[in-house]
Amino acid sequence: MNDTRSKITPATEDSIARAGEIIRAGGLVGLPTETVYGLAADATRPEAVAKIYAAKGRPRFNPLIAHIAALDDAPRLALVSGAGQALIERFWPGPLTLVLPFRPGATVCELARAGLDSVALRMPSHKIARAVIEAAGVPVSAPSANRSGRISATSAADVASELGGSVDLVLDAGQTKIGVESTIVSLLGDKPTLLRAGGLPRAEIEAVLGRPLALAGADDTAPRAPGMMTSHYAPATPVRLEAVEVAADEALLAFGAFRPAGIAQAQAVLNLSAAGDPVEAAANLYRSLRQLDALGARCIAVAPVPEAGLGEAINDRLKRAAAPR
Image 1 (cartoon, helix red, strand yellow):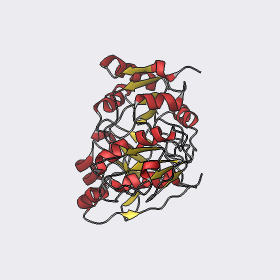
Image 2: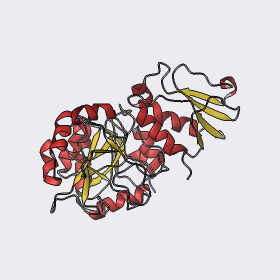
Image 3: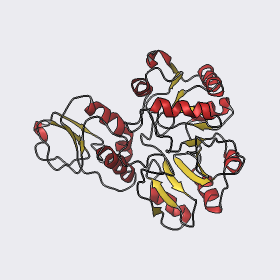
Image 4: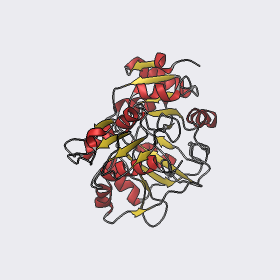
């Protein structure tokens, strides 16, 4: 199997065109977005989508998000309600995924939707991501470019280390800006429902809707959207949350000015944000987990992170990383 590092190339006009050609031909591309790097394939072709599931080792009952490059693509693929249109007008392009009723006869294949009668749609704000989708000329499935359940990729090097030779090309646009996946909201029923906290804080969505979002619990048997598996985003090293003390054989993932007891004896310490900024912390989360995971500590102890703003998404990822496997 070839080393993916040899397939990493800077995102240029030529490499973007090449990425579009690879996707049209049924191949896989490591794609930068504003949230995390995605593993991109043609969402309309079952054989291409099957390559995503195989490369990631992802269960086929776990649906994929279809990424689009233009606002006009949404009503071609889904039935968009008034609430959906309001959220699209306010937050697209950006880190918001909407789960909507699938438009009968639309092009996103059944395998990408995990056989559901709904479709998850997102229009990324990253210019390179949209340029690749435009070059491909099709909706693009692009889950995080990592092995299923593992830490998401926030750099081209992460894609290389996670996916080996199963990807045809990786476009390098540096470290991702947001660092956690998109927020996912379902508009399938009477109550808009938060399926996954993410890069867009819940409060901003609720302000547009004029009401609170309902909350959905994890469902390992039939998730409606990505990122809902109980154990997910996990390093190989066990993770312990709400740590107020740390042992000598543990690594510490700190936040802000809080110093757990025993911090001086920790095997290593990384601070998500010394200033206590949840935006900075989200951007550093997966990179920090990867660095601590590489140390071989008995455990990664994680200091408390407040729920405000992007703290909700950070804590969601950390809870899934710490869940039994």
